[in-house]
Length: 226
Ligand SMILES: Nc1nc2c(ncn2[C@@H]2O[C@H](COP(=O)(O)OP(=O)(O)OP(=O)(O)O)[C@@H](O)[C@H]2O)c(=O)[nH]1
Ligand SMILES: [Mg+2]
Image (tube, rainbow, N blue to C red):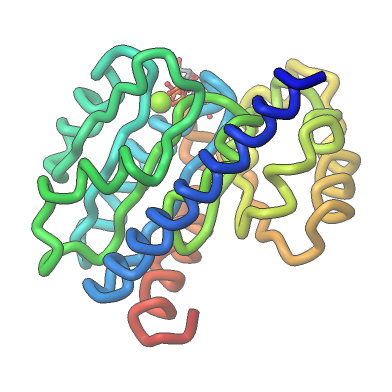
């Protein structure tokens, strides 16, 4: 039994040191009037695709920075840099989530006087990132509808702590047996306050509403309404 107790203690220490750094990060974002969001979703859900579609709509009237979390490659950062926004890739070297220290280490690379929105794309994973506060204002989940309508009920923790969920790949709805009403009901049963967006990064449907909401969130944050 002894080793198990030690394991739990180590995990508790790890989480509390993460939380301390997360508060420092949050203070940094607040001081610089920059809304930071933590984008979470399974591998391939469409997190980077959503960013690729959203950035051109946002950068017409605000400055956006991106932190890309990945286990090994810099492929997502390469994709984002095509949109002429500052982007930093963090490789976790095997870790299944970003932590607040990694985000803090990336901070000196940005011009904080000129950043209204910092988008942090977490490592593709619907479970591990839930436990690690990065100092963000809120979490956004990207969920591919193709994976099935039972996913919110099976992975509820992340939905409890998120402000918005983007249900992506709606263009594929007709090719699946997904029941969108069941999926949305399950999401709202876990978190009645969550904002739900149905989008397709392939054909662009729904992106306007999502982007308007995000733009308003930046304004609310900068107006101290959040
Ligand atoms: N049909 C369809 N395909 C999509 C859509 N959005 C993304 N994809 C495809 O899904 C695949 C994965 O997209 P990514 O944006 O790389 O997903 P991700 O969540 O960033 O993946 P990781 O960073 O590896 O976790 C790519 O082949 C995209 O072209 C969509 O709305 N419809
Ligand atoms: Mg990605």
